[in-house]
Amino acid sequence: MNKYATYNMLKEDAKELIIVDLRDSTAFSYGHIPNAINLKPAEVEAFVKTSKTTTVLYCMNGKKSEALAKELKAKGVNVLVFKDGYFGYIKEHSKQLVEDGICEKVELSLRKKFHKTLFSRFAKGINEYNLVEPNDKIAVCISGGKDSMLMAKLFQELKRHNKFPFELVFLVMDPGYSKENRQVIERNCKMLNIPIKIFDTDIFENVLNIEKSPCYICARMRRGHLYNKARELGCNKIALGHHYDDVIETVLMGMLYSGQVQTMMPKLHSTNFEGMQLIRPMYLLREEDIKHWRDYNDLYFIQCACKFTEELALEKEDLSNLSSKRAKVKEIIKAIKTDDPQIEGNIFKSMENVNLSTVIAYKDKENKIHHFLDEYDKKRNKSKVLD
Image (tube, rainbow, N blue to C red; front, side, top):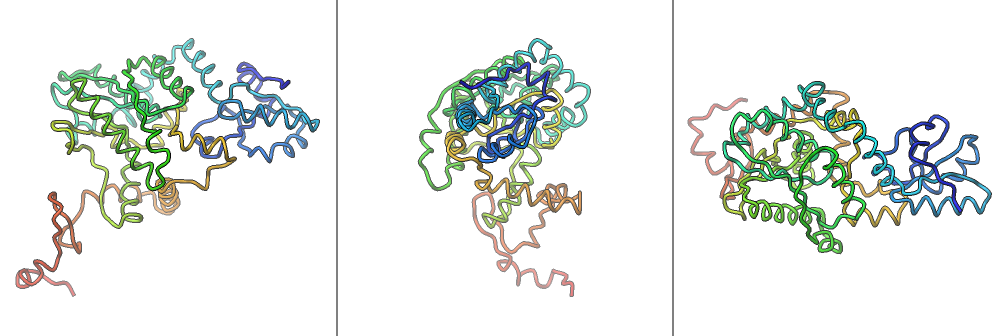
């Protein structure tokens, strides 16, 4: 039988332990137990044999670490296991946060430490793009990740100021999350005093076997279900948690992978749901500031959590080779900005400084193509040519 480490042991005796995370590197980057290192299962045996410190293994839900510990024990190599894995750690950690009054701490951090980088930029985006208007009823869509959870808290803070009347509904759609992921979302919302309405769909099952562009189809289906439920609840807008970094990444993705110049707009009229709008109130917030807020408050959220990702995580040791186009673009931007910190701002501003007279062709809102040759000869006598 395997020997188990406890939550208190990981918190209080961490300096006397080596904590090994067996999940893939992508999952590890989203969040992990403090002081943990990330190893592949095949690397553990050699590592433990050269270490004189007690080693604790954990994985996503405890199953992989349990199996590896038994395999190592049969070879005479002893390790401890954190029984319920990362999900179990989050559960125990949230109990401690509630005892420590985490909700009050989070709200105070938005009013003090993160007022300038988060709340002020949130309010600026809303004002600059006219995202919230009197008598709006907004469905704040919560996926369970850091971005949407922060958006919910920022909306609550905005509502506290209440300069004009508007209503909020905190909406969670379950597209087929695992039991553990759903529990994390429900627990975090309760812990942070976010009164959510949850509804179920079978989106993950429907897209699981789609080979071409499953993520795109999943996103479209999720948005459709959110619009429909929001309208059913009397809302006229849905709010999504896309931020500044999502915007500039979308610009480059369009150029590199789709051969088009487009951006992620701060708000849109729905084409399929009459009278409904989509708004992005986190439009001016930087991802590094969102992560700072998460880590400062010692919070843990879910990542993508789709069944495709989860099933591969159980089968494979590392999913790093399955990185998305967005992840690749993130790396491109990261590499370029080391030489010029203004790069990100320039990408963002480029979508506000489009000169139609300097592009080969463009599409209007009716999708009609306008080519520069259409007017080229007509404007010959009026134009000034620079040699």
